[in-house]
Length: 234
Image 1 (tube, rainbow, N blue to C red):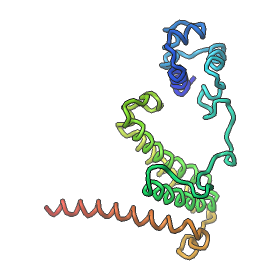
Image 2 (image 1 turned 90 degrees about the vertical axis):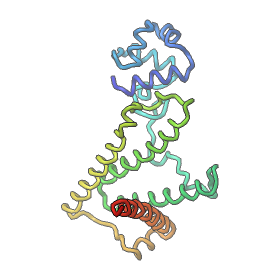
Image 3 (image 1 turned 120 degrees about the vertical axis):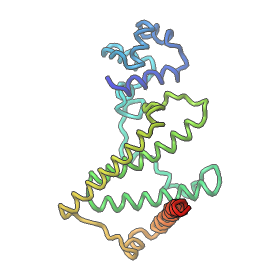
């Protein structure tokens, strides 16, 4: 099947709080065979997949990693919940968390607005991949910091994550973004106006957040450069 199937099969059993022996008996197979399925050593047949879906109460698409919803339903853009649509929404954790969230949500809104104006599907997908991996990285660091959390939750192994495989993914997405934009230039595709007046006009509320993020990031990057220069002089 695929690695996602094995991981999901194991997580569903752990979520159900049953042993491999108990689950195997309910599914009509041996514990050893179930262990092989959960570890990706062997691939099950269709009969087992159907039994597993019934036992864990999920769809085959969810078990196979084809959808994030347990009933197998696909999610459209219109159905996705958007916290930015809420009025007076707040995040527990203080003013800093709320401010940081707003700056990033607003800035990403501008980014995808600009990318959307290019009409480049490849550039949009590459940018989404890059930012998604950044979100994944922060979430995983937070998750892994608590030793009580299930270490098998992620399909990327701890060893590969520690080795920086996710960073390689981000660099690949960044390269794909550069290639997509270069191809768009060559094809003489449309480009959004990105001067100060145009951005302030098109994104009167959100543009200020972009300026703040650009400023804050610039300060951090320049600080790193300054630190290196000081060390070189010593």
